Length: 210
Image (cartoon, rainbow, N blue to C red; front, side, top):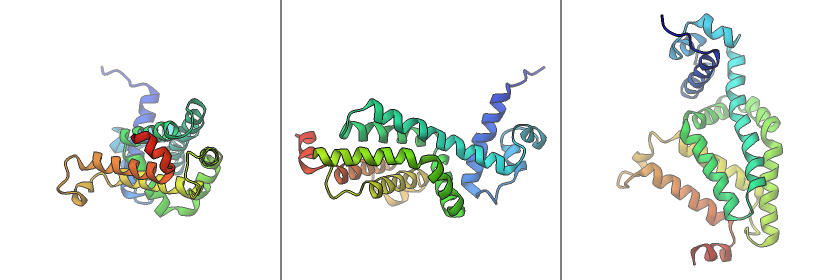
């Protein structure tokens, strides 16, 4: 007789497949039966863990937001300012999205399909922590490390947009860079370079390169 898988394993399989299918077809375009089949179980088994599709959607997004609520204050507390903080934060972002690019696709899909609800959830879940990142950028401006002309909130928005778009488009990046070796890696390197050049003062860039 096959061993019964632990309850948490079934729950995690459901969340992983729900993330994938919601990212691909959207919330309205995905049924609980499809998610159950993808997770290798029957619909009643799925409903044991989540009593509705909306409950499942909320849990999928909660996992996404929980990661960032835990990550952002940790990075800010454990790193000094300047390049070190930017590098660690971007590496953490890259690792999280590389682990499952469907997370980025889900972010883009929710922003397109459910902008009002998703914006409200972003505000509730992440705004306090994004404000900490904005304050860190402003502290860098006062010390001369960060360019004075940078708008902290707008910079965060653009970096989030670029990172999410990069990972959401991993399947088609090579079409834009047909003559480039390892186009996905090169695209990511360019994204990070753009962020560093836009954020840090020229003398800070010179000290890093010199």
